[in-house]
Image 1 (cartoon, rainbow, N blue to C red):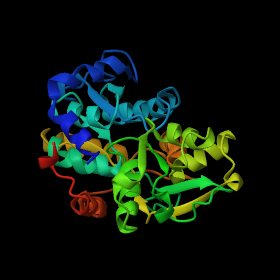
Image 2 (tube, one colour):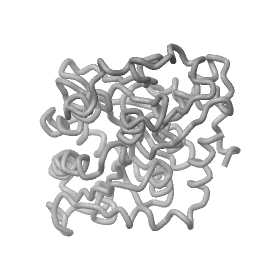
Image 3 (cartoon, rainbow, N blue to C red):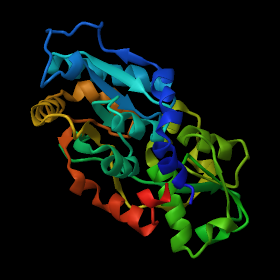
Length: 309
């Protein structure tokens, strides 16, 4: 099972420790605290905020720096942004106490909850204050003879990467529900959502996962014309990514962070929301583990457990 690579990578802690520092981090300000606070609401004199690269990091960083700077002002504590290597590196970093905060994909949160005591506190809402969702999809060229998931037998399917909700687990769930063995489909991991889309555009795959967020981003950039392609499968709506707090930190800190996140203005999260197809954006809204129960259920359905490590 391919998602074992995510869990196995987290288990192999010593091999992955350099990944966090290797990707670099950017502070929303200098090394000194904005108000010199420390202790319960500013552990170690700083808050490290991890982001997994679901889009080109060079594009993500400026958007998240706006959010991090706003959060820093609310907390009165330096917020350092860390764009990590991949899903497994982010789970590992939180488990090893290298991140106080982290935004995970919904399925990544399932593993982070189990293995790193990540606690979901906030996610992205629309202007009416409703939690936003997105969908996974499998696309083929418009002239392709592939008309259903069953037709993928013997074909090449480009997926994002192990551990991705819409770029791994849900497309494989679609194969399962269609009665296809994974071994009957040539699954290639492209290395990210943009890369999976490019594999389809460049003719390197017969089909590819393209979620609604990546679709919106690519259309806005003029790099994908849906009229030239056809969607053969779509998932049920998935609740948007949670921002989580390390559960081993004190309750005062967790409450302070949750309060600060929920008090951010819509403008503070709008640039991040654009990557998550949140339009028009509103302030963040509170979420809990229960919000992501369908993803916990999916992990059970696909038999994705710590025993697979």
